[in-house]
Length: 262
Image 1: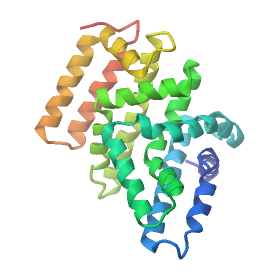
Image 2 (image 1 turned 180 degrees about the horizontal axis):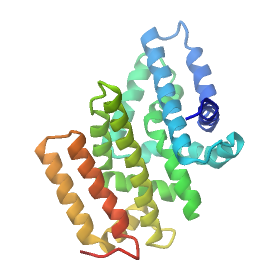
Image 3 (image 1 turned 120 degrees about the vertical axis):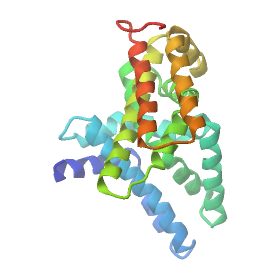
C-alpha cells in the first residue's frame, strides 16, 4: 500500500474517532497517574488508530477522501461509543467494566477511563455504520443485530481465539490478521442478511431469531461444528479457519438464490 494512502487513512481514522481529543486528555495526566498507566492508555488509542487505518485501506476506495469518510462514519461512531457497552456480550461487558475500574483505581478520570475502555470494541462501529448506510436502517437497530449475532454464533469467542494465535514471525502475523479481517467481513455480511429478512423496527433478538428460522438446518450444523471445536480444546489456525468457513456458509444459505434449509 502506498505511503500517501496510509497517511490519508490514518488521518481519517483520527478524525472519525476523535483521537486527538483522547491524546490530549491522556497527555494532561502527566504527573497525575503513573507512567505505566499513561502508556497503557496511549497504547489502546494507538491500537484503534492502526486497526481503523487498516479497515479504511481495505474497505474504502483509494485514494481515500478524508472529509467524505469522516462525514460518512463520524456520527455513527459517536452514537455507538455510548451504546456499545450496553450491547456487547456479557463477557465483553465484564472486561469493559474491569478495565474502567482498573483505570479509575490508578487515578484516571472516570469519563476518560470509560472512553478508553470502549476502544477495543469501537472498531466495530465502522462495520455497523457501513451496514446501516447500505441497508437504510438506524445505527442502533443494526448494532442490536450485530451484537446478538456476536453471542449467538460465538463470534466473540472466535475473535478472542484468533487474537490468541501466535505471531512469532511475519507469516503467522499475516495469517492472524487475515483471519481477523475475514471475521469482520463475514460478521457484517450476516448482519446485512438478517436485516434483509425482516421489516424495520423489530428488536435485534427478534430479527436474529427470524433469520435463524429461515435457515435452521444450516445454523444448527454451524453451531454443532463450533461446539465440536470448542469441546476439542484445539484452537489453532486450522481449526479456527474451519470455524470461520462454516460461519461464512450462512451468508450463502440465507441468500434467496441459494438458500435452503438443508
